[in-house]
Image (tube, rainbow, N blue to C red):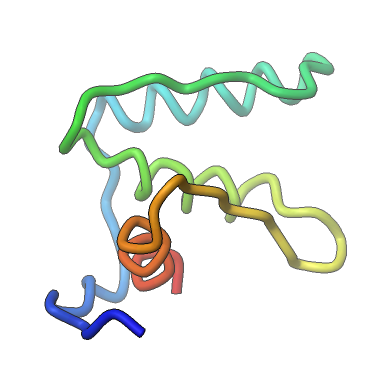
Length: 83
């Protein structure tokens, strides 16, 4: 197990304007029937925060979502943010 080297994230996030726009566009794509819209953003832009907001808005009836990342460190960081 990787040691927890980071401070826990704040309890709630306030999206920045560009994040709100990106989340709204992805949500609109889902609403129009797209099965796999793709959100691309640079490092440090808050992709995990945007994903958390999308999950909050679009989560299915059983309350579960699948979050995939290519490295364990990213999974641990994302897990803390999503919690």
